[in-house]
Length: 133
Image (tube, rainbow, N blue to C red; front, top):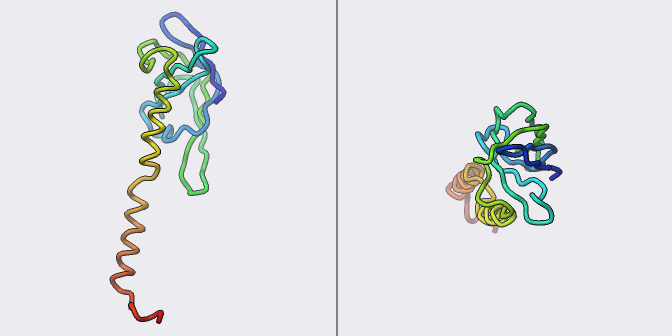
């Protein structure tokens, strides 16, 4: 992540990019954790408007080997008010770590697994148990 937040009145001015922003292309909101504010403490997480984001905000698709889309998001002088700070200043690494920890338990979506389970169930129901003996 190459994203910097600079204090600007009652909020923050964001400049830079964030790679691997899952669902940014259709999310209403998503988190970003710019470089530490102020350095050298932890990051501060901010919520940014998603798919129809503010001026200076755009994203580009990154397709994974599993044919899933993630995104690289670019923020050019995007203003984020103080009301969109997640939790406390300088606690962002803790919040992001907790979110990623929970995400690891749901690393896949149910839909592809359900499709594979249906295929397996169909195969098992019609397979001849003695065919490979």
